[in-house]
Amino acid sequence: MATMGLELDLPDATVDRLRAEASRRGMSVDDLVAELADGLPAAVEPSHRLGLVGIGASGRTGPTDVKAERDELAARKLANGA
Image 1 (tube, rainbow, N blue to C red):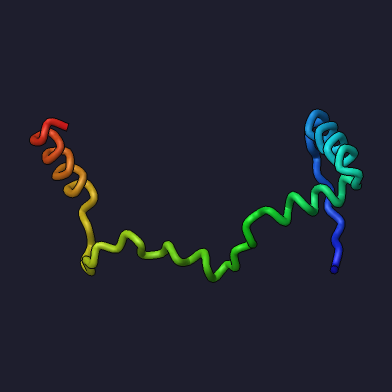
Image 2: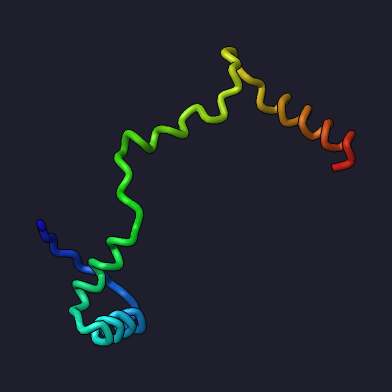
């Protein structure tokens, strides 16, 4: 397993809790942090982050008059008593 150094600035109370838990389990703080990190979701590759692009696509291809769209939406909400 490859290892990497990492420095964290944590509040004293958090460091104390980590030390206490590591001591309770009979392990080092490094091993405890590694164990906690193993429970985190896997890192997402940057290419997967683009999955939200276009999620709200309306299908329109022409320019949109945002002010007119807002005015229309406000008028509809007022008409519906919202």
